[in-house]
Image (tube, rainbow, N blue to C red):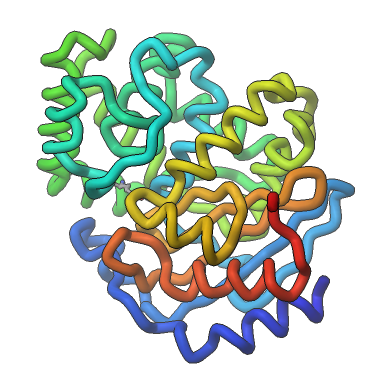
Length: 294
Ligand SMILES: NC(=O)CC[C@H](N)C(=O)O
């Protein structure tokens, strides 16, 4: 596995630095575009890494996977169909009459964050506790990234108000936004994230016990497969063939059921907000190993 990761890193090196960092969140715009890290956590507990696999980065939308896992039943308020417009599209939400199309769009994650807030009283606290326990590393919120997004996140505020206008939030809009943004601003490394997501490859069994029943893990992985890469999901399924979730910090989490979780990070993004080198690395990984869900 270690030599496979080294080979993947060598193959994608020419792509590292391509794409654009997510400068719409000013603090993320300062991250050097030429970083690349990759880690694999296997179901039997081994962790392999290449490049910057131990360097924390902003998890951003990778948090949406964990929020969904912890929020309980959300399907009365959010769909599970792929989107055709951008992850922060107001038009998509309006077209869907306030029922976000899936839990990985920003609007959908505001709904799942609201549920988690109702369920626990502290959504970001629940996320941090879970991530810390499962990864073994302290999951802390990067205050500068959170403040930067809160100060400039007018689209998310608009989405939250629109969802609330459709009667689909139980908590005050500002509380939901605050928990959502701080959850996105958690910083962890590829190795930490691959460990924390292992329950997705192990039928719901986490490091400190059962996280979800196997049937719910099947559903979560299926939702990632069709919605996790936003409007780039078809191209990603074709090239990689794994359930995955991307974030604008440049991270991608991918699940190989019953084998491993792969986390890759490189901050240069394509037009859909997915890491250019990250997608290429996962493609190379599945080609070299022959692993996919197909
Ligand atoms: N795709 C993403 O990672 C988006 C997350 C980011 N915090 C936002 O709301 O815009």
